[in-house]
Length: 479
Image (cartoon, rainbow, N blue to C red):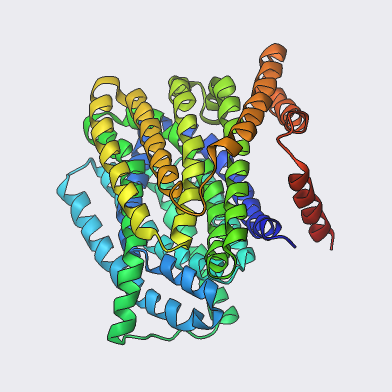
């Protein structure tokens, strides 16, 4: 089995989990957005953005560093994850207390305060759940994360629908999230206890110092990344209205869904890349180049299709009251293309021990995001936030490609031109067919998929090596 096939196989389980979760999220959003309306939907979105910022302080990158080290030597599983679990518990408690003080100090409305406190408990349960995800990823046991994600998405849907059925307000609907995450954590605790060796804690000064010195750069990167991703909603929360937050978040949530899918891919690739960096750098370079091509193939098609059908997508998912969010979605989706490519670059840089470089670039991205969002939101509200997101993501991918161009993993511009042209031509063919047929969303999507796949072969985007990878993957699935 080739390295690329192995990665696709590992990430396939996470993609399956993502597909299940996205279907559940789609159904959940279908009901909650219509039931709550733009203002109350905005309250939940504001709470999500708050825990998105605070939640990153629960780990500080220690688990990411543990993934890399355990991927290189599985015998380190017990000590690395036992020690990081101890510190995660401490960081999570401190973060939760700081979060509660922050919420109470800002004196939001009663409903908003209750919702945000509930999401604070969600943050606690999610912190420990993602700890187990790190454990699974380091050992390439993606099936447990697949099941866990499916459990959570199913539970939050069922509980939310029960709340809606009984006519509960936004506070009770918000309670669905921490309850579902707590039950999901119970499952992960069972798997960790029964399938993995007993955790041990190493508090020797040298070990702990090494853990923090090499792990914190990953954490700082996540801090900056979360700032530039969530800052738009935070600024809208304080200087805009709940309706503005609801309209922007309705578009951003779709971007987050796509980001989650490719985040799973990065999680599957990271341990493999870390291993290849010490064993075979030529294979690592080929894997990185191939993954970037696939990310562009998928990301560009999603962006083009979303632009053509943005209004239909918004109305289908959120209802006619959210139709004003369609222009925001058409803009934001292009940030998604850059975001997908950035995730590939970030994963490689982390795997080759250049986490400090990622931290510096993320810091620049956070600064750009804060400045551009502050300017554009004050003038154009949530539409300005959409443009700011695109500008920030473009800045990030430009800087990362620039850094990697000076390494042995550089993507040759001369060799990249032809594949990029082929991918663009395939998207033009797909767009032309969709525009010509002018059908509804439900009919247009399957037609677009079929046309795009055919166009990829016609334009030569899918080459001989790609076909061999597909054959290997099919053969492995059958066996």
